[in-house]
Image (cartoon, rainbow, N blue to C red):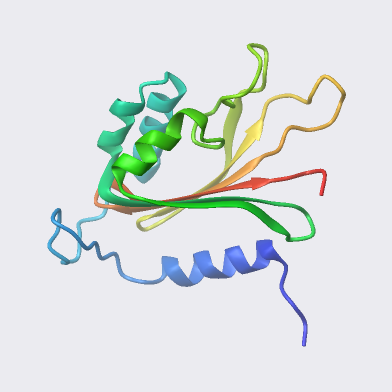
Length: 170
């Protein structure tokens, strides 16, 4: 039996989930089917714009009260490390200042550090998947790690956010 690599598993999960109807639980919609957001990527970009400017409280208007946030790092061999799962606005808000992949600038990066740009954007219903890729190499010539981002929206607010740092040296 052939085994799938982590990238293949993530693509399969994304495709299966994208085919499911868009339902949101919670006070916003009372568990009913929601109206799709006209421009899901605009919501995601607004969230990132606020975080880029360190306006973390302002970025919270783009997420649901019960937002689910997952992040981890993985190497080319599929090993998962530094896993974190947070539930709710309060927990996410506290994590934003140090959250790698939640801004287009790394929080621990020098002033001349890389700026990350969206690429490989796929919007399917209430799901958005894209990469954040650096605009330059490290001073030593090695690449900065890119991030894979998946967002699930409830209406025009982020219900779930997954950030995966793609470690290039493993």
